[in-house]
Image 1: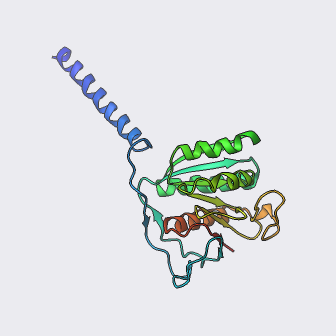
Image 2: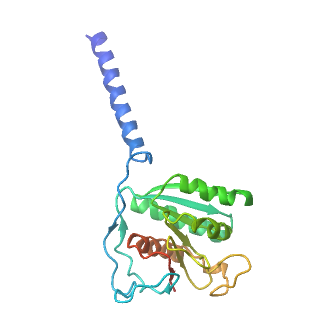
Image 3: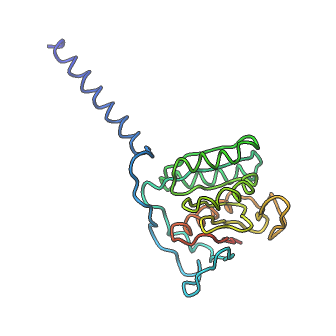
Length: 224
C-alpha cells in the first residue's frame, strides 16, 4: 500500500509547489498586460484649489494631510531610480521602499553608482515601462532635465529636489532645505541636509504620488 501511495503524494506535493511558485511570480511579472492605474480615494480640500488648477511649473502648498486618503490601485508599478550614498538620499530611498511595502506596490529599483551611469540608468528605468519613476538623489537632476522632456509619456516624481523647468510629466515634492534644481542654478531655499527627515521624506512620497494619480503633474509641491 505504501509503495502505491508514496508516488502519488510526491506528485501532489510537486504540483502544489509549482502552483505556489507560479502564483508568486505572475503577480510581479511586468511583461503581462497591465490596466491603467487609478487613485483609490480622493484628495481632501486644500490640496489645490479646484476652481483654479495649478498652471504648468507652478509651486503649490497643499494643506497638510490632504493627501492621506489617496492610495494607488492594485498592481501599481513603480521604479525607484536612485544615485548617491549620502544620508539624504538614503532617507529618501527608505521612504519610497517603506511606502511601496505598505501600499503593496510592485517596486523595482535602478541604481546608478557612477557618473557615466546616470543617463543609462534613466533609460533602463523607462525600459521597464512603469506607471511611475520616483527619483531620489541630487545627482539625477541634471540628467533628468535632459531626458524627461523627450519622453512625455513617462511620468516622473522627484522627491527632495526639483527640475528648474519641468515638463508636464515631471512632478516634484520638496520643502525648505530640499530644493536642489541642478548644478549652477539657484534654489528656492538654502540647502539643509538636516531637513531630510524620515517624516518629511514620507510626506513627499505620499503627496507626490497622490498628485500624479490625480493628474496634477508638472508642478512642484511645497510641503512645509
